[in-house]
Length: 215
Image (tube, rainbow, N blue to C red; front, side, top):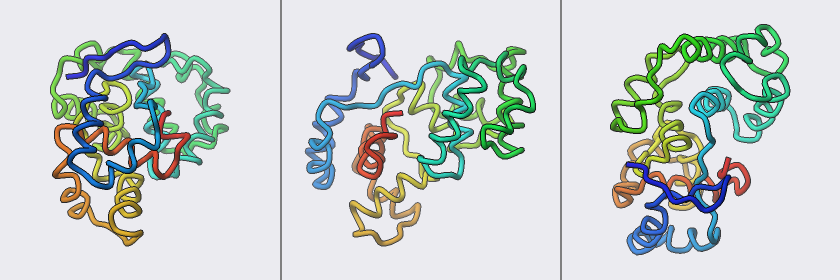
């Protein structure tokens, strides 16, 4: 599970990252060329569990650029991104560019956290699928959002988010010369990445969008 190495106050290097890079470059000719392009950059935790989940809900079914824009406006309304701030904001959430449904989802997420109906203090010790099973009980959180949480908050090393459009686009561009790919295609390409599918996914995201892949 996710032991980490502190590199400074804001950037935490997952303990598996360097080994994963070496293994993936050894096994995969595409990643052998791609990984060195980004030097010492690496996956960075988004911080608190609540803010990670809120950001993932915002990012559902929209581009990374649009999601980043909405997130910045959300932070203007809820700068600390706490459950209490979200509940207090109420109808102001709609001014952030959130759809009515996403605003409801984030409000419900805040209510779950404030009422302590989630056991976030136990997630770090739970298996990937156990965390996913608990998260998807929250309204608005499906498997994709749970997987983003495992990647960006718990820094789990072996997540393959097959419903992620960015992953599919990255595989399409780098492995299929831009041709559309299916989930089966993606699974086949990723078969050689275990147990570091998160790391490979992150580099494919970064190949598409160098800025937001670190967010």
